[in-house]
Image (cartoon, rainbow, N blue to C red; front, side, top):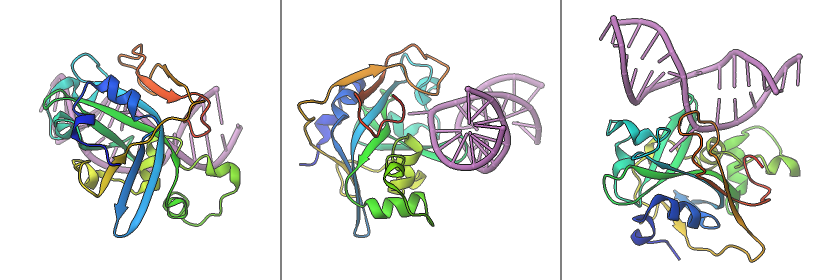
Length: 197
DNA sequence: CCACGGATTGGCT
DNA sequence: GCCAATCCGTGGA
């Protein structure tokens, strides 16, 4: 079942927690990609200097000020796209970065997107979507998808339960220097598709 | 106008 | 473990 508006228009930390285990789906001209979310990070412009929205509304970050339920995509280090789930009420400037997923459907096409001329062995399959840039590359998500309505049918999330044995843990966020102490990275303990242990 | 640096990745040591 | 690649948003002159 597709997650509705109410799921997204809540506080960012609750959404971040509950995104774990949910399935992100992209349908592009009949091609379906899907993956189970296993690692996320929360960003909150009101108190978090690492959030793009901390400096106020600009052309780049305006989508992140939408009400919850939109996709915010930005270019990282000049070469990788990263995608976020916008949360909260309009103007809150909060979002959850998707850092890693477990590939489900469309795996062969993901491999093509990530490694155009390469055959993968079993170990390399774990490198397909274990990082925010890798997820976007596999799913062919780019800046054109920034602002996509997640209650539509291009990109959306499906409800799904965590397995009984799975445990959610948290840590500091990865790759930032500002507000680095905030423990806003959430992930499924011991999942093989994490970007880091 | 220009300089700086970042929510990353992959290849090499 | 270290570091280059590569772009553009942002802020200061």
